[in-house]
Length: 247
Image 1 (cartoon, rainbow, N blue to C red):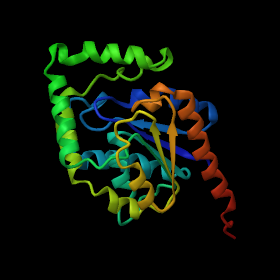
Image 2 (tube, rainbow, N blue to C red; image 1 turned 120 degrees about the vertical axis):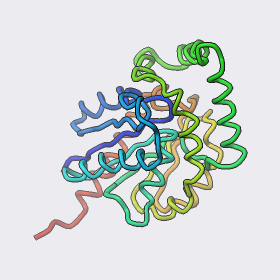
Image 3 (cartoon, rainbow, N blue to C red; image 1 turned 30 degrees about the vertical axis):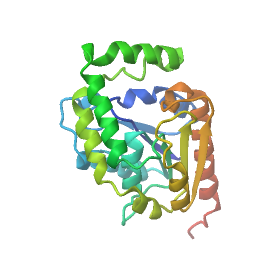
């Protein structure tokens, strides 16, 4: 059976951030769904909630699992929420998991500082878009530059979404994950703070650090990230071929 892929975006952005990955997976022959979480992208008018985010991911995963093994891929906030989802006491039908740019525990001073910076940025003229555009113009390649914000930016959802992350017990969730897990970080990612702890706690995990890359690893180095998707899918295909056939 063909590996199915579900992609979960990070905070403020939307499913459009995955356009390069969606195109690559289509060429590879793997069905893929990039979801929009509540309050983001095509669902900007909805109110964000953690339960709504879990429900969105679960609906996509449960549907994909009817057609084949599932690789779940989450970036940043989407990765943190997906860690909690995959690590439920009753495991969902996820066969492999990529957690990108999300190896930090979102609590305490770190989360408070991040929220304060986000609120300060949002208070700038034009909600800081002039600075965001300048930064993205300098760091993202032409092939993905338009994708990151094509679905709009969820400014009004940002603080609520960040605040909701504080209830996640990521270490407990990681201990319950028993499927292949790949942590993928950019070398200069600010959310690398707890990557060694995450790697120690997780049962079947690998850490891949992409050199000369920021937090936006999927968009900044799309070719590298797509190659890593291929590694994960190939690993799941190999595991599937080794499973005994039912008679």
